[in-house]
Length: 210
Image (cartoon, rainbow, N blue to C red; front, side, top):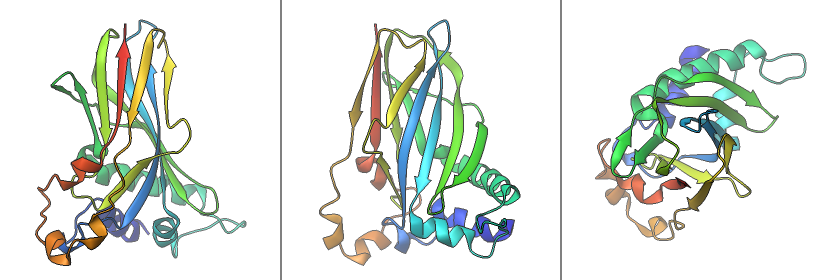
């Protein structure tokens, strides 16, 4: 069971031939930025909902409960494999304070849920060092190889939690990739795992606190 889903996760993470560099998995992003009582930014809480096709593939043949949905054991094991596999790819989450990159500690509080149609991965990425409240912080979510297409949810996708008084956020949604459907397969074949092609489709939140 785990081996089967690991294969799906490796595909999700782009560990495939460069020919598959255009999107094959779609993820809807909701996130929450957590502020401690002293006002410092402590981490990002992600909720990623996978498209129906990928969710169905990932669950094929796995243990289900009497209601036909994946069992609690199945979801727990899949969540662990997903988190372990995403480590190499920095969880597709990149943070900066000005021009200085911000590091993350290992994820915590991770789980998978299933609503009958789609899987949603929930996890918290704590900052390696909490950031002072005053100033501006940006967080991008994207896959550099553009195998996974991330998109912010339509309604209120990013929230501020905790002592976030005096903070405001601005969202940047990438322009639709209107031109990519006309690009040749040869173009995508030329992309490598080191490519940062997907950065132009980054979903960004900028939080400014006074």
